[in-house]
Length: 500
Image (cartoon, rainbow, N blue to C red):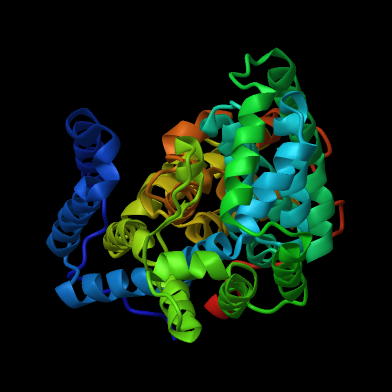
């Protein structure tokens, strides 16, 4: 039985879709001018909510009810709830790994192993290996990424460069790992199998990573490092004076990686990692436990207070080195609340826009102008970037374009792996470059480096989409159906959020 369209609801036009976006961009620009580096303290969140109000008014003017707009907003928020819960646990993990000495030990030994000239190159490789093993860029950034930023800063390298190298490696691994949620989601939306998708992605991903590594290697051998060996020795000495540094501390990250490899879901994995950090803090850092709690004698009480403080609140460990003091600081779950507020506001805006199909209205135009295969792939990537900017969620940037372009790809004889690869080239990689996207906001908060500071150095994340467009423009290894092959219709395929 055909679905009856509500005659009271008018179809949106391009002007309807552009109005909230113009309003959003205008006010975000004013925030940068008037608030500077403090835009994420509340100004951007407020602008997103106000822009959502504009989109909601347009939806109601088009005939949609307030209830339908509200339900779409609630659904949008619900889709981001796992990310917000993960963010809270990342805050807890950062806190307990700090007081346990895990992160300080990584910094201590890292300063001994790494030479400044090859550090950025090695950072990309290490982050890529860890992320490939775990399937999670978020876990990689929250663990080894924090330590690498600390090491790089001590070596005199710009924190933006180091964070960019961490992001590049982490998202390479996330994109190519069969354990990754987005790597499973993209082929599910396009209608191909996981390993066909991964093999086909290597055509665009491998040259992009090679270019990225070459760039970081050139930077490493030409960069003017403002560091001398005595500075490294002083940093190591300050860390050793405050912590009992031992290789045994690396049991914690190794166990966490094993837990993730065993496909334990992210929330229990991060909770286990946080609790392990607390246990190792009690075992290995008794003097620090007393210092943080301010209580002597009763070790049970001291341990309880110190570990709880590391999980939910701010920890500042002071040494005689000011730079080290900045490295030995964590803010726990409470430090993530501004970022969660940003994600919440972004999802409110995305939900309000979706309630009247305003986002889809813009991407329909892209399909009309995509005449060649190269322009179709460029348009798909542009759509994924558009949804990362407007809907603020990388899953939406894969799911919505996947549904919208599936039929077009099929009619043009393109195999589903062409679409699935393009969705990852555009959606997965660019999400972390948008300050108010769930990925961009989270990684900036965890690394302590703003999105706009590391984005210019996240070379892999914008080289890969450009390489994908270039390869498509030259029609290189674009897979098409042979004569007699019947394309499979995947337009009605749905995705359960539990699979994400």
